[in-house]
Image 1 (cartoon, helix red, strand yellow):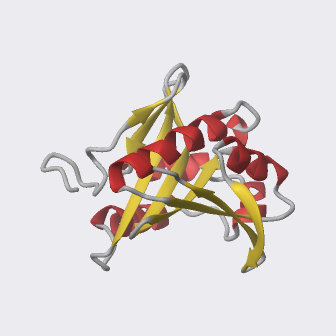
Image 2 (image 1 turned 30 degrees about the vertical axis):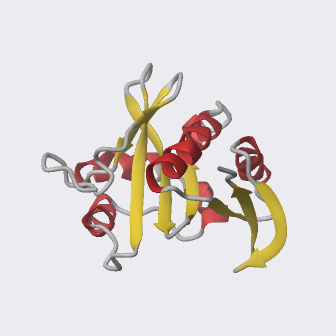
Length: 175
């Protein structure tokens, strides 16, 4: 799924919500995203620490190059808030066969505005439609109630299974 004019494996896949554009990740997004993700509190549930623009640029270079496994597709988007004209977070999907693992992150200044819910609700049909995914999976820290609400709003349900300290949420797509 590579487009000639973009450096992202998901360049042809775009989506919009009432307030957001899901823009395929590009290396050039690293500097702005480093600022979006700079709050150490943001990493409480997702782990790690804020990355420098250079470190994020290196990570984005690997992501936009795509998975080294031809059976796996990495899909990464930044979230652009149209009225504010800035990036506010990311969504991603790792597609393998008929399953996709999804995740979302919204920078601290933009949390509580429904951006993650809008993005996740857009992401699920995007990956199920584009890749024929039948199972959508998310892993949410049990204490991260806001992220659990996003998963539920996107149609996923908790399974009761813990993996690396996170609760597995799932949606089975019926065709």
